[in-house]
Image 1 (cartoon, rainbow, N blue to C red):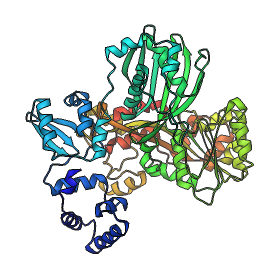
Image 2: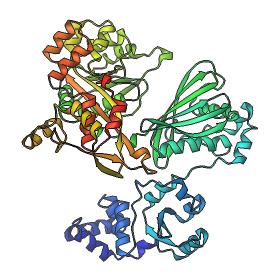
Image 3: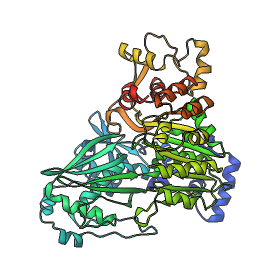
Image 4: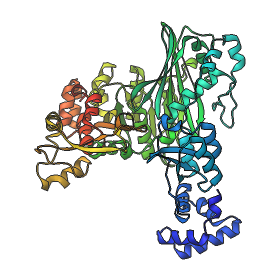
Length: 597
């Protein structure tokens, strides 16, 4: 960057001292290190992680009296991106940000390049307000350009047949990982698949659905738990696109009668994203569901995931035990596996042996011995669990308890001094215990081994652009009914109850209205939401609940006992998050109905 040569090292040093980042003595030490390593002071600052590239860019802007824009989390609409064609944006590293007073705000990597600014001004036909931005920020905006599928490409697709598709598709090159596929750009199908996956990755989609209909191919993406149609393709693209996905996933191209599962990995920007592929025959062809597992954007800390207060303490008490079982429940896509990984992250260290049995292995964790289920060779949860018990484990994770045999083996492992984590598909935490009874597990075994049970759902977070408002009568009634018994009754109780529940400065019950928050619609926050978090319920299996299990009590009886002992239900946890401005009451009602606790 030419601006880098325009800043005085003395100016930068003084700014770092003024901002309290470095002392004079520390700068002198770094200068000596830079001299020894024969690199610049700025290079040492970046290498030692004293400054990030973003912080350095901000200082460069300040020293050169230029406006600065941090674009690392910015989302720009496609309409705005159309002001600067993608090829020019990439060539000049210049991206549009918005319109102000008839001028187009443009962020550039080289904001003092007069020739580039003059060219872009003439090309766009309007004056520019130029901002300085980092290379990472510019690339974030560049990644939001969509790959156009023009009429010529669509026409080309009509001529694609199964025979020449095999020739047009490259299986990709593997660098150090044979599963990392480089999607070739030599065919229209390649461009379409790249477009779909880039859109999904850049918009934080968890799943992509490719769905054949009678006369078209519908493409939908699930963003923050909600499916949205992103593209509709001609019917004649179906065979070629699905064949391509099968090739990349190492599946049988000529098999159309039975479901197939596969996986591969792509790189979008500088992120490696694992893709799980599920293909099923349906009436109008083959449906493909692609699950995207972006490990770089997933926090495995319990607090970051939304665990708080009594629920957090119940979970911590469970994982602090040396034996027994911790079970989590919820529907498909509710984050159960992520919760198990978070629990393992809390306790893993060099002194314990952790072995997992998963189908599939979603996140590869260092320090954990992970086994992938392979039904084709007879390696299922039950047989794998028998093998694990011979590997001297301290902690065992079983991806899912699906049958009586797996349940019995997991409980036997817990009885013999192991700490066991697993999941079940039930509607609530209390439903876990009767579900094990339904599988044929003896009540006394359940009562003596289960330590903690967790129920969970995922809800959308309110985005960064937000506004506060006062609740209406319907919302007031819902708040009082759901968390009226939990909220403090006076100002004197606020601190104590807030600490107990894990949410600071909770409102006092009985107010005429409550201050709630809603998101503002933007390209980066569809519907005013961005990202998701969990709502949870958890309880420890007490003596009273053990007695209920021995009597084969129903889930509603166990639920009532757990609540009497202080359990916060999922719905209550969601409402507490809503009054704290993390999500909305409508979102909680959508995800956690009264019937699902």
